[in-house]
Image 1: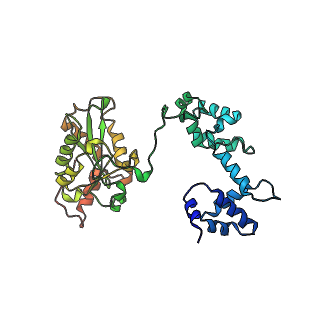
Image 2: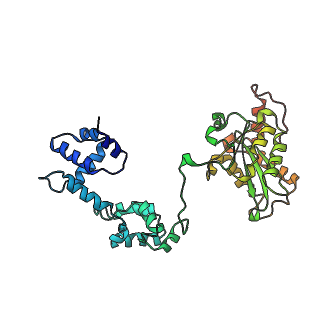
Image 3: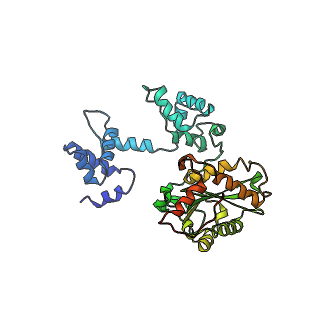
Length: 350
């Protein structure tokens, strides 16, 4: 078992001088890197890098004092930024940024443009820090406007497992039943809003995943949470229970009352991941079709409920390739007429 001071230093990212002395002694005795690593509680890769850095002359081998001096030199702060130290590399990065290339594109392209020059290498993270970390001053701050976002300040990104829904008690789409993905069992819906000019008006859209059957929600006043709750509850309550299994929505504030919707309709509601509209593919496609009837940048509050029913009927009777050129209304009627379904009748658009 290693001594206590080894255990203490192993919790530090940097090797201590005592560890370096131990490495030197054991290496001189002919021990392998893995054996040395086990003795000091470090990884073999750490010992390997340390031996490479601390060996200045092959004859003398690894020297703890030399290695410590080099480590102290590397640890000095502040450091001159890489893009300042190498004017050729800095000029290349600036030129590519002005061409609207992303930091990752620049970093990867260096390998192609300078395959035999190891000095012409920089990570995309270094480029970002050179733009956004003021104390480095390696690149002009104005170059940040060349990035796709054009932000003056960097916006941190959470890791996937750190993201939280904006709705209390929300269930993520990853927990949605597998049968909803298969598009075989009817009753799994996707929902969203299409909005009008200045997001001041909206129409709710509901699409059944198995058949593409569409229902539209009339929202004549506002599209706040209470209005959407009442519209979904009223519309879904007209359907038989077998057609009310799940509903998938994005994380918009209009679904803040999702718990009340579930209690009133029996729908299990699931929420897409942030900025992931493809997780509601059926709904996104339908919303594109609806723009033929409800153009962008217009006031959607003036459309009468009868017109919404007319539009839904047209879409529900339109032949679809993925349904074998049957219409959504025909496909839904067939599913409901199968022996395993046996639900009460539901009026379909004709």
